[in-house]
Image 1 (cartoon, rainbow, N blue to C red):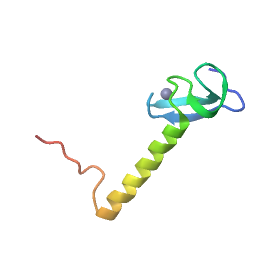
Image 2 (cartoon, rainbow, N blue to C red):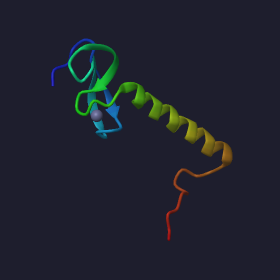
Image 3 (tube, rainbow, N blue to C red):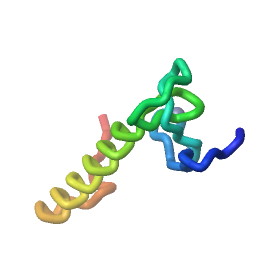
Length: 74
Ligand SMILES: [Zn+2]
C-alpha cells in the first residue's frame, strides 16, 4: 500500500480493519467520495455508521439502557 497525499487511514466497518481510503472510484477515476482500498466501502457510509453508533449510544443513555444489556438468551 502506498499512501498518497489525498489518502487517509480510517477504520473500515466492512473490512473490520484500519485501511486506506482514497479519492478514487473502483475504476481508478478521480471521485469526490473516498473508498476503502481493500473492499471499496465508501467513507460516507463509514461516517454514517459512526453517526448511527453515536445516536444509539445517546439513545441508550437517555433510556437508561446498558450497552451490554441486550441479552440473546433463548
Ligand atoms: Zn474496507
